[in-house]
Every structure is written in structure tokens, then in C-alpha cells.
Image 1 (cartoon, helix red, strand yellow):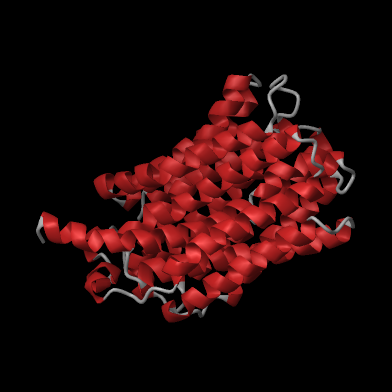
Image 2: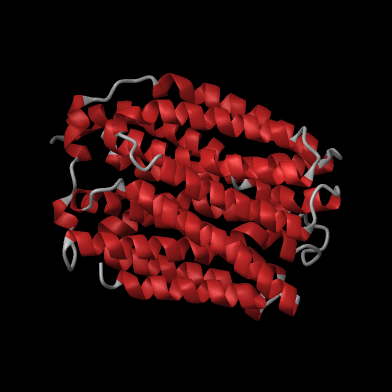
Amino acid sequence: MTTASTSITARPALGPALAASLVLAIGMGFGRFAFTGLYPAMVSDGLLTVHGGTLAASANYAGYLLGALLISQAKPAQARNLCVWATVGSLLCMALLGLLHSAAAIIAVRGLAGVCSAVSMVAASLWLLQHMGHGHGAPILYAGVGVGIVLSAELIALGHRAGLASPALWMVLAAASLVLALAASPALGLPPDPAQAADARPDERAAGAGTPRAQAMRLIAIYGLAGFGYIVTATYLPLFIKGALGPVDPIQVWAVFGFGAVPSCFFWHWMRLRLGTRRSLGLNMAVQGIGVVLPVFSHSAAAYLLSAFLVGGTFVGTVTIAMPAARRVAHAVRFNMMAVMTAVYGVGQIVGPLVANAILASTQSFTGSLLVAGGALGVAAALSAGL
């Protein structure tokens, strides 16, 4: 294919990739991860205790698992409508969190938000990578998670400076998400481009060691460990560094987490093309593990910021590497590979906060939780060698 023809087909693909990215910005960056930034404020406002926040986080991850299971039989042609419903659901959940003041109700809504987040992740991936056939749009797609984290974190920071309480902040996030949804809607209505059909085929050149089915099972295990490994940092980071940064709002460290995620999708996509799935995923897991355990060895502001950047700069990169790999081996299994991977990721995220809460209750420290999480990522790195 000539350079001219490549540019002709690449230009129209940008619209769908950006639209799918905005779906993830809303469903994941706002609907899911904004809770991490607002969690300390909700505790300060008396809406949640630390234990209640852990239950809300676990309910969200349980909802994520449920959403992945519900969508496990979804077909690529259904993905566009699923993106719309998941986006609407995420918006409603954010608005409800601005209206409800009962801890039980907040926990229930966070569970529903988890369902919407999982549907967003699977549906956006199915729509762009398979229905539209734009596999090269994967970095833009998954960068949406980081974009959503950064935007929501900065909106929360602005709200803090304006003296807004957490319910008002949830309403601000809901309004901002509506703007993003309206921006995404035109491209979501585009039909698939037949010229991109070749891009939707499995990449047999990337085949690694072992049978495709064995690789699929190993990839699922790695993805579940990744979900467990990153979640302690992603759930508690602004909480356990509170007061460690002096006058700096802890939400800004969460923004660093998001800033690391945005370019990481392109970096890890490039690494996958250069090194292959096995080596790039193993390196990704190893770097993420270092980022997770770094606060154990240093409580300095620099260590916290570097931890946020390393974990933020790898966790969405894991998706960028693993989802195209899942597409490559999907023909070897009888289930929706992307949905099952999303489900086991959800299992890891359910277990993570529960383990962290148990260790915190017995030790009054996050050290044990971070070490266990880092160990899980180390095991995932070792398993990657067999892909």
C-alpha cells in the first residue's frame, strides 16, 4: 500500500477512534476512576467511612465483573448500541451520587456504575477493533481512560478550590461527561469501512509459543493478576498520601496517574510492535510492580509522584498490549475473549480492596497490601514469558 493510500484510509479512522476513546473517558475515567479522587472528600463530608469507601469500591468492582459477564455473548454489530447505553448509565450514576446521601445507596450506585464501566470497556473495544475494523486505533481508544482521569481530577481540584462539597462535584462531573458524550455521538453513528476489513483479521504473524488456546488461558491469568496488582494504588493513592505533600492537593497526584496513562497507550503499543506481546507485556508488568511497591521504601513526595506516574503509565498500557493479543487468539476459544478478560480483571479488582482492607485493619498500614500487589504483578511478569 502506498503512503498516499495509507493516509486516505487513516484519516476517516480517527473519528471512530476518538469517539470510542470518549466512551472510555466517560465510562472509565469519569464513571469509574473519579471515585478515587473524590473518595477522601466523601469521607470528609461524612458520606462514607473508610470502611464504607472500601465497600463502595468493592461494589464497583463486583459490578464491573457482572457487566463483563452480562456482555460476554455480545456481537460486534451490537457494540454501538451498548456504547450508548453504557454512556447514559454512567451519566445517570454520577448524577445520582450528587443527590444521594445514604452510604448504602452510594454503595449500590457504585455497583451499577461498575456494570456500566465494564460494558463501556468491552463495547468500545468490540465496536472499534472488530465492528469498525480499526485495530490501529487501539492506542487512541485506551488513551481515553487516562484522558478521563486527568479531566475529572482537574475538575475535582477546581471544585475543591471553589469550596464545593463532593455531591456538587459529582454533578459537575456528570455535566462534563454529557458534553463529551455529545461530542462522541456523531462518529458512533458511522458505518464500518469495508476497506478496514483486513485490519480486523487475527494477526497470525504475532503467534507466540504454545497453542493458541494455551496462550489464551495464560493471557486470562495474567490479566486477572494485573487487575489485582494495580488496584490498591488506583483505589487508595490520594487517601494514603493525604498530608504527605504539604499544601499540594492529593488529587493532583491522581492527575499525575492519569497524565502517565495518556501517552502510555502509544508507548506500549509501540513496544508491542517492536518487542512482541511476550516481552512487552512482561516488561509492562515488571515496571508496574516497581511503581506499586515504591511507596513502601520511601514516603517522600517524589516517591509518591513517581509511583503514580509508573502505575498510571502502565496499567492502561496493559490493556493496549493484552486486548490486541486477545483478538489474535480469540478464534481458539468458544467465549468472548475480551469479555472474559474484562471479567477476570474485575475479579482481581474485587479481591484487591478486600485484601487491602483486611491488612489495613490488622496492621494500620498499606505496606502489606502494596507488597502483595507488587508480588502479583511479579507473577504476571513471569507468566508473560510463556506467551
